[in-house]
Image (cartoon, rainbow, N blue to C red; front, side, top):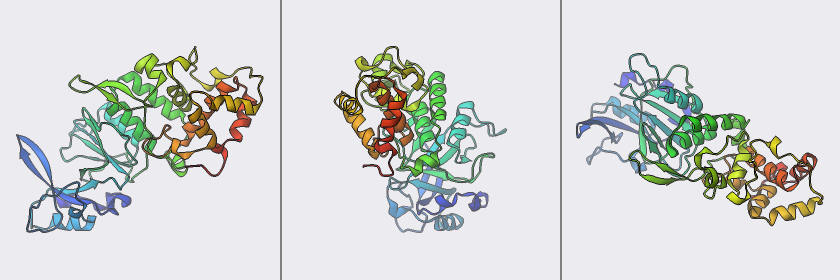
Length: 365
């Protein structure tokens, strides 16, 4: 009912977009279905499309039409569109409608995304809305769906107590949740491992955003969907040496930049034993001058990546197809390569890194 919609709880940033419609609940094949409705009177079909922007209006218009008696509507909704960096995360059958308690996996997602969250119309699900961009690949696995276009969310304003009432940018968290719960089979071991790596990145989404962070693309591996059919899921670099050698059970690597760099190596180029922290790759150094070290590094199989890192080219961490989730991971990636080619000499690593484009105020794109 319109009286249940508390407009003051809708995040201001979300309310500013003219991407609002109404919806009506109907029954199809014995199941309740939410049909999008145009938020204005029309002589044609009242049904709206989540891909036709001409069918959408501002929040005030959608709410006014919902409150009118021209067409029966059951609520208002927000449409996700490619030009708008807003993502909706739909968690089904995860909430006890009596107690409000969330399933542990749903609570994990809500806590990590840490943005506007509300109860779905059924009372058994949760909607989380965040700023960010989804990586390529599937958008649903089991009871978790993630959309940034061609879909709409009902907006109930039944706010989940303890969560934010604001819309937050959560790109790193969004990538982690997408990889763990949608792209990959959500095993407990992988969830725990990746959660630790993300927390160790040491950068907030806001600070990473200031440095131009956009969506990254995780590495590729074989996963199985709900029917057991094998399919390729893009998740951490399409030629991952770690996946080729270890599959999904590669050792837990503490530093995210080190992990990204190891993914980029061929299986034969992976060090043995495999380093799991930057301390593991410290060494006595090599008897070469700085210029020769850089020439050897950039002439290697990973030379194109090393050169791009050394130049500070921002496409390595910005854009949907980027190699690293943010510049902090790119920084760590260059440190790994420098450690490898300097023989782990910490003074030379520091000197070369400070001379790189990653330390400069201007990045090449």
